[in-house]
Figure: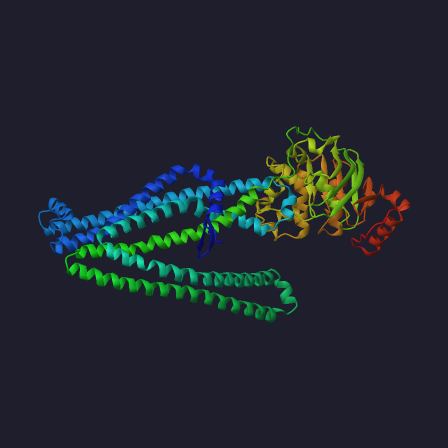
Length: 619
């Protein structure tokens, strides 16, 4: 059974119940700018009155200036009062036409500006709230979602909501008011002509519903084809070096061409159906217009109505199509906006799993003792990461964490940063359970370098000072020197003030890595967490940069995830992970003597000169 609260539109189905729920969800943004919307509504009423008055000036010319049909009617008496003769009346009517046009323009301008201003401010507030909400979500949420989808919700979906929250209310209200007022005036002018005009509604509606169904299917097909074209273009343009290296240019052009031609055919079919509907509606309207003209002209000839009345009737009939189209367009937009609103509301409904408890306290200055007490953890997708891990790391200790991919090394770092909470056991710093302290006070005392270097579209100086906004130029330069980055920074066009651009692609991998290290060290953290910090560095630079955290004057407790088993003797301890468990933990020399697996991995690494770490077995 069809849902009585569902309206079919050219852009989809509008579920009034869902639309009402979405509007209620974001109603506070409408309430915040209700003053602007009230002004827009009043201006819309003024514009409506001007539109209704416009045809009557033409009636006055035909019925009073050109003929005497309105001589004894209210309109004629008003013109007699305002002028002495027909020439004066014509001048008054011309002034009235200009005045009505000016008022219509003024009211429409105020309406459009107020709607645009309120809509843009609503969108801005909502976008800011959604972005603020995303900042509170843990990395786990972003690991499970596509960045493109989040960006679409943050930009396109929120912008579409403007149609529902702002434009629809005034636009539909004004359109309905114009239709009702014009229909009432047409009924008053001539009921028979009004009946003829309304007779075209059922067949037009039937044609629209029937053909619109095919249009929606064709449009959906066309959008799918466009998406496939865009997908191919994205793949090829994003990997042009690979395409050219393998001489794939001709093959890719042919593949793109086939898909492009298919997209063109789908688009043409959609356009053909839309044109078919437009022509059929035009023909139906022409038949109705002929009937109205036939009956109307005969009525004028018989004295049943004046020529001016017929002109006003025809003007209203023609003008009614405009608000009908506008309402139909807005209704379709609201149908799409409802879906967009549900997507945005779904995003806002996500509650961060990692957050400060009510009893959480500020973390005191960290000394650096780290404790993992029988910690187990698995990711939301069911992948186990750590199993009964127990570790004690003393203040100032420098520890290398090694093991195969997927052994749980990076998970250890994420638990320390409290991106996740353990499923069992306790992670503590200085005997403080991380769940009992505030996130901000914890992360404020930690320096972290991720294995995938992340730099922002800021200057070099701003990227280094990212975690310490009040850092002086001297401190920034000192951090850069510490990781041997000052030389290449000074060679950039503007030195420390050089904008890096999107993802800092103009820098080499090693240069980006050194800036990330400088950023972490600038904070002078009590805990330093490094996930493969030597990525992208040559052997000489790797050794120079490692001095930044392995030198005797570096006092922070340091955990370094290493894929290469070289220079392990410079660490106080080496912890070997495998299968989410600690296989062995001891100084490098001791592990070489007591753990065959570690000794074999170390020997292989030295021989091959590559980061070879295989699955480890218990010693």
